[in-house]
Length: 149
View 1 (tube, rainbow, N blue to C red):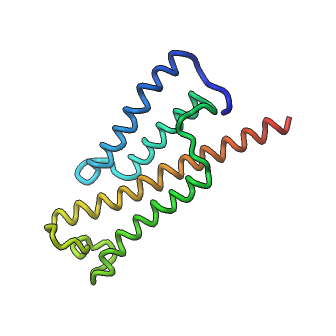
View 2 (cartoon, helix red, strand yellow):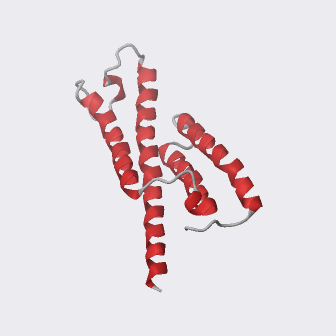
């Protein structure tokens, strides 16, 4: 994946598609509490934008995230999920009991929406970085096989 793929048309169309896919992923995340979609779908669409940039631009891609950083950030996404559950545990409730979250100024419905959004944000980050880690592993394998010949 060191070389560019495609030509001018693919380059120009990817410059249009990538920002729209990122914006759409944020919409999927934001609307996931009340419509189909959510953390997993948003993470997959965000990763799609980065994978598309890597496929089209090759080594000149703007979105290059090393595997070590991607794994660490994926772990932070999973921690964010668990931390949201701990918020209610430490406040006397059960794991992921949104009405026991320590934000007393919010109504029950608002706490529920906030809790689901925090969970989905953690899942989004975890899924996006996991897909990027898989891509980076495949790229390293490709480089290894090229040097083997």
